[in-house]
Length: 474
Image (spheres, rainbow, N blue to C red):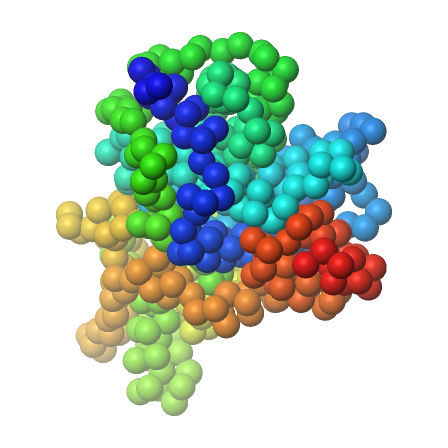
């Protein structure tokens, strides 16, 4: 029977999709996303904001508990495990980005991993179960974003993961819970009432909470729906439903299950090489290339005293226009900071955002010489924006370079070797080498894993015991 509403259609697809619908490319791309998200989440457990939310969450206790990534001796109820691990994923703005703009994985993966640990021991969740639920959550986000042309641009009013991420988490958890179509509708309706957070909190310690809350609230919505809590059964159809977030909201039905076409097949994600707003990655590549030209004629030393000014041509994105950042979070959301750091150092890294680098005199001097320009043809879209960096020297000469597609963008994806290096660098900050390698092997073979609890064992830092268990389960 055909669904008569878009909400009913979504519920039908969430309920009806199965592992046979997954294509090889969707599986491979989603495993890359999972590996990257786990790595940035593990690294994120070292951040100040993570420690604050972990300490807060200790007030909750439950007979059912889930793994807190990077911790052998600390577990939380699934809702708060999803929250804390979600905060870790976005704590450094190092997680993946999609088009239309959102951070898709961080809202979904912590929720489904936490939920997978809450099932009775006799009900094992396989790696394929986890992959399917994860991809349902990613798919729902992408479909909702495509109901609005406004969503295709870098956001101005609210942070997209707090809306579509919450809905995606709810859909993924509904799938893992095997909810029927009526309960899937309710899960979406409940999640919509948790959705939304203003973009004014970008570049603060509050922004990572957006991802943590999306994961937690989506899981909570699915759990409430499993108890038959009722919501508006046309939540995706109405202007006062999901339409409340977009002025040009125009919902459409999804492809039929008989020939389902996944958005991840059509549109890959961007995976970041350094932890900052995606728009700054064009800036980093353009500035690094300009630096190489500068130092070729200056004995391989940046001639800081000879620089008159630096012009950075980027789209107008107000919350990434920060001429004088004073914290790591502000620096991660500053076109100017990344341009100056890349000019000084030749590349960007995790250490670029350490306090001593943010406040070094040479960088502060260069920031004072830096100005942004917003050409009319440079639109605020991750699909089409570019960056041009021009260094004007005191003798009147200029050095310029332009980046149209940075390495890590979906048009120029990271090679497998570089993705693994990023993961290993991130995970090794908190896990022993055996656990780090165990996660890589488990993720790469996820569709063959009989019990995905092995992944949580590695994430907690278990190694010897988990390795022997893994051999039995694979």
